[in-house]
Length: 346
Image 1 (cartoon, rainbow, N blue to C red):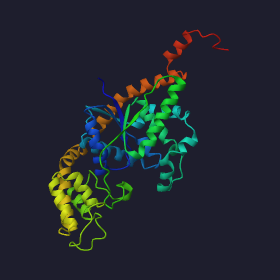
Image 2 (image 1 turned 60 degrees about the vertical axis):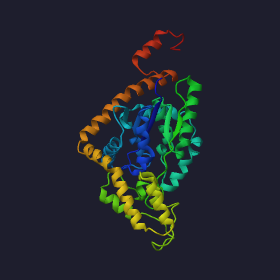
Image 3 (image 1 turned 90 degrees about the horizontal axis):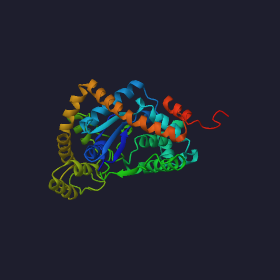
Image 4 (image 1 turned 120 degrees about the vertical axis):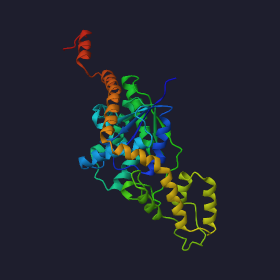
């Protein structure tokens, strides 16, 4: 049986952190064994919320590549694609935008949420970025899209667009399905959502010393004034990290019980967590350092995968053009003329 096709990706907005590692990258690594995977460096999407310095985007792309490869994304078993190099992404997005109303896009939950959160004056591109996202998915005829629950409304919009296109122009696209990860969402160092703009993340590029410093600054139990006070484990990010990264589950339970009983202090628990995290990240850091030392290799991987993906996207867009009655090539146009359609020049 042929493998089901997956399209997913990240915006190159900054370095990847350990939330990305456990939330998406480790899942992507596993999916490479069972699915045909396309991983998109979604640089066009960066422009929907920030007209950043071009050099910064270039740097972010290279760092993203180093993070992905170090985390186990394998360019032999999957295809890594740079979105902006393939014009079919933008072309299909424009064509699909004809099938969606403005009011429908304004009802996407993240639209108003991000306007408020980021204090944006929304551009046309920001309003229509779910259409570009749908184009990204449909361009590869992806059957599955690994996402978090917050992205489910975007997948539903892609399904709506697929159904509408197929109804009007004939069966062309599969209806993509969301593939939800069962990975726990990792809180930030301050117990808010881990986010680059909040400066509450441990990055894959961080040194062991930087990681230790960040761990020692972590939010714990604000009601606990002394090490001998009973502490709360639930809602405490230090223990959330222990649950995910500490391989010794017996130790984790013992430390939790001691913390609840006021027999162990925050400093001791954090020191142990720093050791656990640095042990966990050590092999990844070694691989990442090797990739960072060879930036030309990163570009080779990126452009090689993009060239491979372009063969897929060209075929899809030609089919879309033909189904919509658009002349996509000279040979196709000559084939239309050869049909000798009566009244074609009337």
